[in-house]
Image (tube, rainbow, N blue to C red; front, side):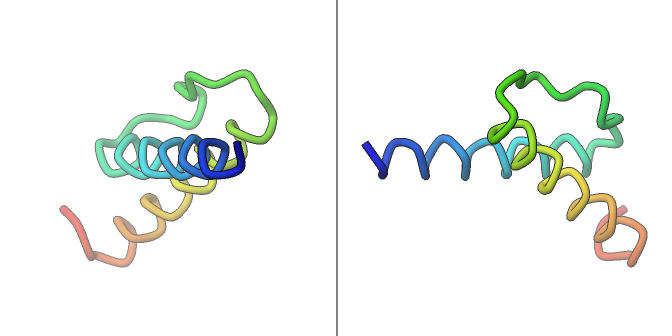
Length: 57
């Protein structure tokens, strides 16, 4: 059970990262669950930071 939970959160983080790289806003988060939503937003924030640092165009 823990492996599945970890995979779900990891998937949410990477989906948020991809959304941030593509320029989507944080209001586009598809998750309602607080834990999963916070992981998605964490990935989104990481991507936005990387974009502003010039790592991606």
